[in-house]
Length: 173
Image (tube, rainbow, N blue to C red; front, side, top):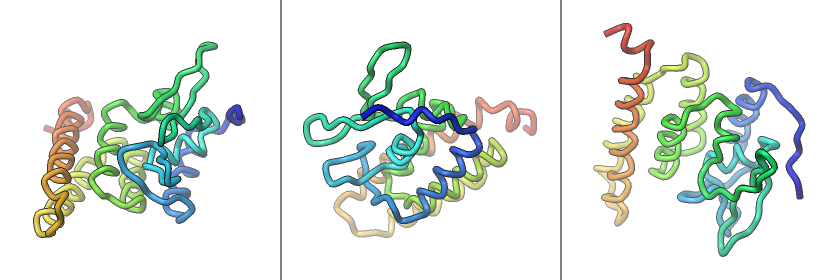
């Protein structure tokens, strides 16, 4: 099945993505855009609604398939054509993937997206959310604790890189 190539504005797709993350329509998963249990990461939801991709089952999970420049690309990570359609950078995309895979709920990610889309540089809110998540992980008794902490630390490092690269933040220093 080919994707629906209906053009929607960047703002409309952003709003639709946030609404779908908060709707409960999608069951949240980790480490795959869409898995065999039909669970989605936050970018899997975007792939599903973007009109840019369609799904193809490869092995046990699904790949987002993109047709770009008359080439078919199968992606296990968010395709550039998808995240750029909502105006995100590669670094922002990696940061949000780390949030998803570290256990942040879709509603938390939707709030972070609002901050990114509204202000473009809502780093303080992101940093605060990461600090809260780190405290929650540290006080938990899960077997996956170290893995979650490692993913969270990668997210924190990505945030600091974004802050250094941001002209708005740098101009305030």
